Length: 333
Ligand code: NDP
Ligand code: GDR
Picture 1 (cartoon, rainbow, N blue to C red):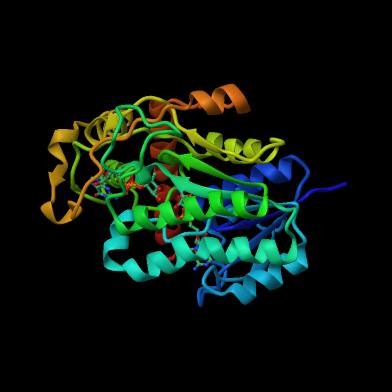
Picture 2: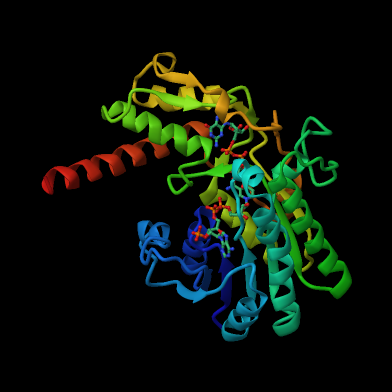
């Protein structure tokens, strides 16, 4: 029997890679997509991966329970991956209520749609290392206490606990992946790795003269999204639902990540980098470092891609993307 998966947030970075991964496994993949006035723009990541025709798209919004009930009824999924969120930490201070509505309460909407229509569907919740915030232990594992530092992290904490609660209250197969930062050429341009690789590519091609960043002393445990979506799937293949930290176990400063990107194009970071106080956050998560031992032991999952390889892949992709745009612009002049 062909398995059916429903992915919320299928147009995002993780949604696109997860859809690709599940299609390769023979799944029928359905995606819930919120309505946009920009037809054909929302699915740009699916098109980049060449799978836009293979994913069945359904119109739904995480804030609209009735739309989720309709989609779950139509799809009758075996597995539901809830990846949709207002996922940009900096925006969560500017849109705290929207962030709560989507990133927190939206999780309950998805869980309710499943509980009412397809209670035996397996559920994955995209939890976040941001929940550790002001870290309470040097290496963060499943048993480390949480201390969220942004409206986004507070919302994710709600999503995490409501997932645990539905598992315990209703016996649902609901798992939560506490994923540390993961990136790729499909990462949104507002996140720091992609901002850096796009910025470096622009400087290399003569399209920009500087790169402005905020707190470059912050440290993150960065992995590749392509590796991390596999862990999501592995969690739902377990007989017993549970929560897992997914991380590399290595932490690096924004400064050093940025240096790797400039080194890729043979340029000196110090000539182009400007620190902009406006880009500092009201409260910062200074350092995150994951302990992925449980995921390794129980799921057999391990991060495969090094930070250097990933940043090099991202810089190369951004140079290719911008160069292609330049060719198109010149051809239409
Ligand atoms: P993205 O920001 O790339 O994708 C978010 C997705 O959510 C997009 O498809 C977006 O749609 C969709 N979405 C936003 N609001 C709504 C809404 N109201 N209704 C329906 N869909 C909506 O995030 P990532 O792919 O990077 O992350 C996936 C999930 O994992 C998120 O929940 C994120 O918070 C979480 N996470 C991510 C980590 C990371 O490092 N990437 C680490 C830990 C957790 P649209 O395309 O229309 O904008
Ligand atoms: P994060 O990712 O907040 O960890 O959340 P982001 O890449 O935005 O920031 C990482 C760190 O870099 C610092 N920083 C900057 N960040 C951005 N975006 N832009 C800058 O110019 C800049 N300069 C310095 C930040 O202050 C921060 O310390 C991501 C998201 O994907 C979440 O959805 C996810 O839950 C977590 O990762 C794990």
